Image (cartoon, rainbow, N blue to C red; front, side, top):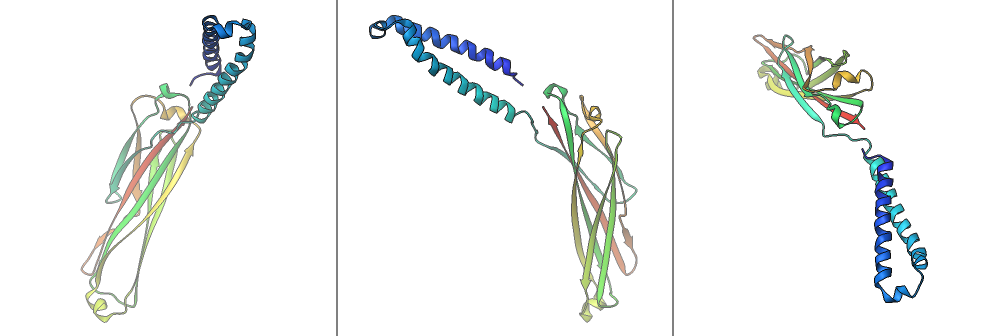
Amino acid sequence: MKKNYDLLHAGSEWLEYCLKAITRLWDNSPTIQKKPKHTVLYFALPLVTLFLWTDFVQKSVDTKANRFIVPTETCNEVTFQNDSQTATLSLPKFDPNLGTLRSVEIMTECMVMADVAEKEVKGNNYALMLSVDLTAQLPNQTQKVHQSSAKFNKTVRDEGMQQNGFSETFKDAKQSTELITKNLDAFTGSGTLTIPLSVSGLINFKDQVSSITSNLKAKICIKYNYE
């Protein structure tokens, strides 16, 4: 990031260039030569100063506006079919050559999906609720548990459905964002971050009457805020 004294140095060089140009114009113009050189410079100098000051202010505004840079977020995802499955997501670390890391945003999205099939239904209402937990071990040794749930309700008033059953799919998604401002060294360097994941609460059940198959799609995105 360019410092203010760099802008001042550039401005002084531009001022010197403008003054030399005005001097050459005075030396080569018979009309201007009728007036003393200091008179021409007296009128020209405020215009040059105003131009340089406007350019300096604009560059300063642009520099402040770009002070905090948020790059395009990087994402990775995995689908869990059962509770015994584990996974590790890999995401790029922050490159310290870009600047000083100030905070990390980690977005986690969980999608619970389930297929339900019943060969026969007793009563007028069928209800099912899935509650699934995703546990993520972040690089700064912070463990986060993301709770997701999906509810399924079906009113059964038709005798044919009560006797023959039904088969349907339902799903629900939940998203959360974690802002991290401490232990940022764990996110900095070369290579990739590794985030171990595990789940609990998935149901995969089947008998002669009922069938329930569920899974969880976990998506994790990371953003680096630096200056």
